[in-house]
Length: 152
Figure 1 (spheres, one colour):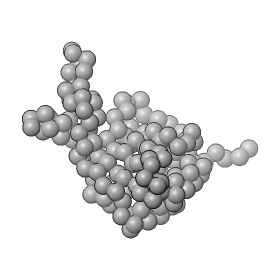
Figure 2: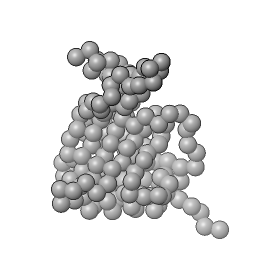
Figure 3: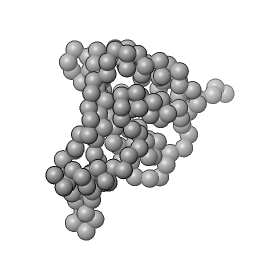
């Protein structure tokens, strides 16, 4: 019996990085950061972008090397927490967005529209390294950031 790994995911992501002529990383709010449970609505209905930047060539090279070096051990368990992505990576070719990846570091979950493959466990540490490389943080006090935004 063959051992199932996250090689397909890793290879698909590395291929997409190579094909992209622009990759944009964004750190943003999520609707549950400030939520009125009684009213059943977010107090920040529009996404607040805390930072967004296109990767430089050296950052793209860092991202590719990080992905190429991921341990392929397949993620075989998923947290039962609420998925709250605060990071997004958008991939472009010829000025057209070709793929989007939304990441929740709290739950270790990612939603990427370019694959149906299961990610390797190491994906989250690799994506965390990318976030730190560009000056973002995988974990922040998102509720406090949302509250600061509401006060403006």
